[in-house]
Structures are given as C-alpha cells and as structure tokens.
Image 1 (cartoon, each protein chain N blue to C red):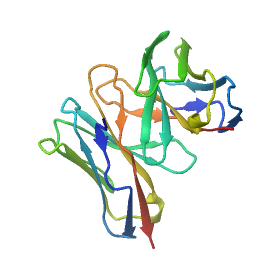
Image 2: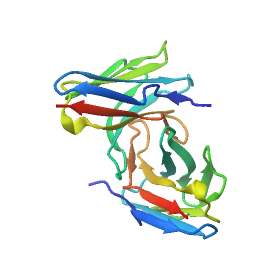
Image 3: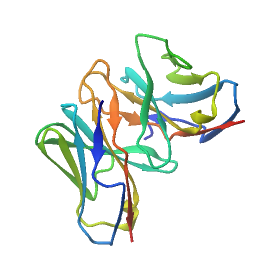
Image 4: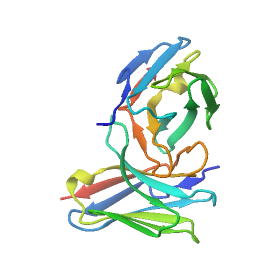
Amino acid sequence: DQQVKQNSPSLSVQEGRISILNCDYTNSMFDYFLWYKKYPAEGPTFLISISSIKDKNEDGRFTVFLNKSAKHLSLHIVPSQPGDSAVYFCAATRIQGAQKLVFGQGTRLTINP
Amino acid sequence: DVKVTQSSRYLVKRTGEKVFLECVQDMDHENMFWYRQDPGLGLRLIYFSYDVKMKEKGDIPEGYSVSREKKERFSLILESASTNQTSMYLCASVTPAPNTEAFFGQGTRLTVV
C-alpha cells in the first residue's frame, strides 16, 4: 500500500522555466511534509517542508503548496537551473510519535539548457 | 555542521555472508532510521530506533536486524546476504518535532554476488 505517490517518474524542463513536481498521499493522519533532492551516489538532502496548518511555504526559488482536501502537494522551482537536475522525493510524516518518514517513488528532473 | 556518516560507500559481498552497515550521527538525535533505495520504489523503511536499545520494524524488515547500543550509532545487519538485497542503503538521523527533518548519510551501495 503506497501511502505517498509520485506518479511522474521523470520530468524535463527548459532552463529558466518553472518546474512543478507533484505528490499525492492517502493517509489523512500525515501532518508534515518534506521535499528532498538526491544526486546519484549521494544521500538525499533536505529542500523544504510544510506543516498541515499552512498551505504554502517559500524558500528562495522553492515553493511547496499543500492542498489538504485533495491530499496533494507540489514543489515549484523557479527559475529552474541546470544544477536542479536530480531525483526529487516527497515525504510525509506525523509530528507526534516516532516521526517515520514515508517517501514517494521519486521524480527525476532534468533541466535542459 | 550536521553529520551522518556511513562506514562504507561501496561494498561487495558474497551470498550467505553476514554484513554489517554502520551509521554514526553527531547531533544527539534519538530517532534514527535505515532505508533502502531501489529504482521505481523510492526509499523504503527497513528499521528504525527511537532510543538506545529500542527498535521497531519498518515496512521491509525481513532478512535484516539492527543494533543500537549507543545513541550515536545505529547498525544494520544482513543476517545472510542474498542477491535481492543488492541496493543503496541510507541511514538517517531525525530532528525532534515540530520541525522534523531527516539528515542522511552518503549511502552505501551494496552488491551481493
């Protein structure tokens, strides 16, 4: 049972344009969401997070949007840069308890010059 | 600077061998996790620990065990390595709520032949 889903395995975007990565979840108990970026042969690095009490969080070129009623979140990167080419994972957790992070399958983002 | 260190970047082991993957964090976190990453499957939780000597099974614990004798160290053990355990293994140390964030090690690419 995949509780967090990223339905697009890959995405290709022109440099300078907006990249939009999507993520859906099924467990309504999740109340905290995170995005990670991963380069080959490295561990994931944290990008941005959002609590369920908000619907938007912004950090520089990265913005995460949360739609609780649709159980959907998205990561917007604008403008996209070549160094953004990586695999992006969304993750969900509950603030209370063991804070297990449940990850999606990942989306490979390629930024074309 | 936050640091999670995994003992090996690359490992090649034979089928049937007992394999130890070590992870050390320097942030005094209580919660530590072991994930494996496989193409198309994202990061899947093997085991986690929320305190010294405390452990819980994740989603795919079969064939694995863990040890947490000291707060900073969390070890993953493959009791008898099999080829289907060839994977990228990622250790994470997690900050306490409410600003949950997982810090990952660089990963261990394990090949079982």
